[in-house]
Image (cartoon, rainbow, N blue to C red; front, side, top):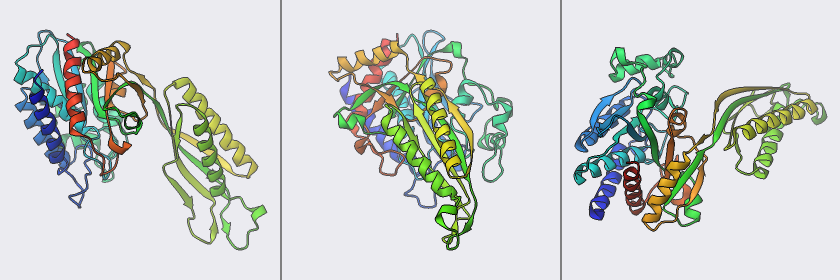
Length: 411
């Protein structure tokens, strides 16, 4: 294996991450915000398409605005890798992006090594994973695998532009809009290379980790309703304070999550009304994000949390409402593919450590129709979804080397 070439490609990959970080729609050029199908995404696509072509890939824009680069193999079936080019607001420069660029680096490694492969190879830069613009995550991978049904194409952003209109403005051909990009029977498998976005690998002093599964995830909007009233004239024992009820439930939720293995729960947003200093809050709306690798267990935990909320509301003379916004099943990685990653790491003298993914990834959607695997790369300080998100060049080189061994093992 040409270690000098791998080191050069790893260094180039990180330089390209820096270059893509300049494709931002934020007024402050030092901050990275790049949402689905926007002008910043167009600039990122232009750069990425050029890099795909340099790596010998045939480039196309599919019906969901995903950028795809394909290398033909000796047979029809294709191994697909990729991740997303969109970001959250004020993002880091590696979440998603690094996986796309490592796929291109792997294609370049094949090209410069002049190897012919039995299986085809495709790199996909998904247009949307974060769901920032249209408030619906995974639009890119859904479109790639299944196509975009009318209900999704009718989603609108904050300016009232529909997803269908945005695709047309982005340059997708009218007769391609919404069509799936690949037939499931043509896919051999999918793998995603991604920063860990957590502290597990760092705590163990490891560069790489094999993902066993992407946890199931449920999102809810919850609401407590009581009675708004004067803060000075309403005795404590006569209050129907919606915020206190919500606060008790939030702490109860935290307690359950801390005592339940592999379960995490987050209240990420809370809004109290009337929202003034001198009034008892009469209404509180909040979000709840819960995750667990076992779908049955996650469903039971959700039911338990709802029962706790209704008990708290009843005792405090409040009304409680709960709406499920999203439910995504856990996505186990293929045991056969995990074994191949393990063989690759062992051949490099690296420990084949396995771990769960607590974050959502495009691989979750692909898993509904194809075998998947994931390899995590060490995130210094476990930091992600933050401008200080980082990776180390040596870890990136090890990932590329492992991915090359892994792909060769597939045949």
